[in-house]
Amino acid sequence: MIELCRQVRDAVRMQSCVRWLHLGLCALLGTLCGMAPRVVWAEKASPVQQAAAAYAAPSDSEDEKEAESDQDTPRRALERFLAQARSGDYFKAAEAIQPSSTDVSDGADKARKLAAVLERRLRLGPDELSKISDLPTGNLSDGLKHQDVIGRIDMPLGSETVRLQRLGTPGARRWMFSQATVQRIDAWYERLEDHFVLETLPDALLGRGPLGLLYWQWLALPLLIVLSALGGVSVTMVARPLLRKLLAAREMWQALLERQRGPLWLLFSSLFSLLLLPILFLTPPVGQSVRALNLIAVEVSLCWMAWRVADVLTTRARLLEWLESRPGLRGVLPLIRQLIGIALIAVAAAMALSELGLSLTSVMASLGLGGLAVALAAKNTLEHFFGSVTLSIDQSIRVGDQIRLGDVNGIVEQIGMRSTRIRTADRSIVTIPNGKVADMQIETIAARDRTRFFLTLGVVYALKPAGMRSLRESLVKCVRSHPKVWPEVVRVHFTGLTDAAITIEVTAWFQVTEQDQFLEARQELLLQILEVIETFGATPAFAKALTQPASR
Image (tube, rainbow, N blue to C red; front, side, top):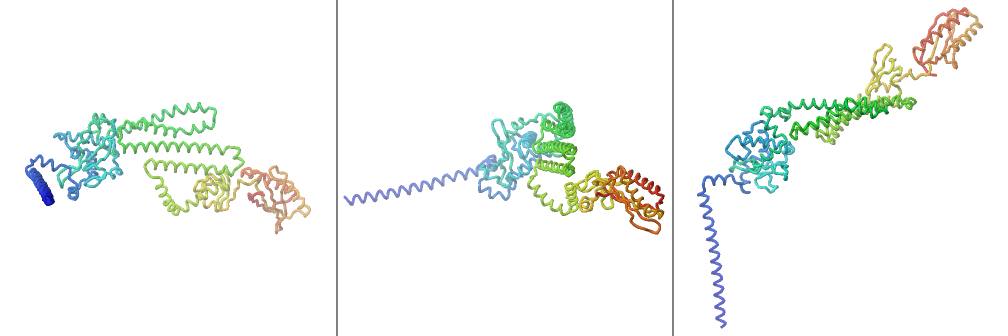
């Protein structure tokens, strides 16, 4: 019994081995049979099937082998298409579009419409083009094999992609717009705001001129500028009378309004230009540049307006009674006015650079380095500028003062940021840099409270000592009795004896500060002194008058 069981077990094991050998043999035969039809099909395929297989998307292993021979990339294909379209060669640009018919003109029309769509719906500047793959295999990280998305077109039901597809035979593959993209060109084109203009105007006006503008846009641009200017003038003429009525009771606001004609015209003209700009149907890059110029004009008009306000306020501030008693602060007003102007110019320049797309941080850094170089190169200019600041704060001289500065004697007409101008008695202008003025000894004649009178004369020896004493007392009374002489201090003394005469010195101060008044008073006093001398029977041997402006 036991022996019988062993025989059965061995038989089962043998049968299992045979079964497994049979299954392995069947699998090997099946594999060989499956390979044979594929080889035969490849050898027997028709020419059409062979062409379809050639334009089919290459496998991953083929990508690596053909990368060296296939040098066309998505970025190059797009740049080539845009360049051909912008030059007006739409038949050449149509080579990047998969043809939907055998009509060559249909491909050129598709290329023209697609170029119009891309220019108006996508931003394809240098920065955007740099993000598109420049590899023959395209962008492999987006999960799309042999296709690259270059942008999206907004449509009512959502955004639609614009794609390039890699097609062609091995060794001569090209990137072309995908079939799905070509099928959507007409729908995208019909949704352009200016597609009726592109279809209506003749081809001569649709050519591309300078700065990326079409010829019809160049013709319409002067008309837009004229309309904007007329609109700005009209609104300014209507707004200013209305504002005058609203601000009739406020004199300050009336004065500010009178100075705002130019800034208001520029502001309203720029706003009108922004409103009329959409009728030109500018492409995004050109439209952005033109809008930036309009915004710069708006910002310049606002800074101009602020400058006019500062000018009116500083001018009227000089007339305040509170500042009349504080000449130091009153003299600083011209410098404050000039500094406000410089600050507004800097603000306008910074906003203009920002509108043009420049980074203010980098500009400021560049200005910091450039400022150091300018400071070294313009050392004298900076010295004169800080000299003007010192003169304004110290108030050593003011506009209208009569001063003596070295050999120059005259009236200060202007204290600028760099130099001071002095009008001399000969009516000529002497310009002295502020840096030198701040270091020089300044004699301000206008600051004196009295004008000194000094006279030296000789009297012949015709009088005895008692007569000379009486003469001196009479001269003191004569000088002190003059209505314009300061009576507190009058000096008349005999100062020397010569061979021919005795010398007398007369010193007094006239209570006048103007030069013309001093000359008149001195003339009257000299005649009175001569009358006193003649009354005593004396004779002047010589006379020498000298005046020195000073303060006691």
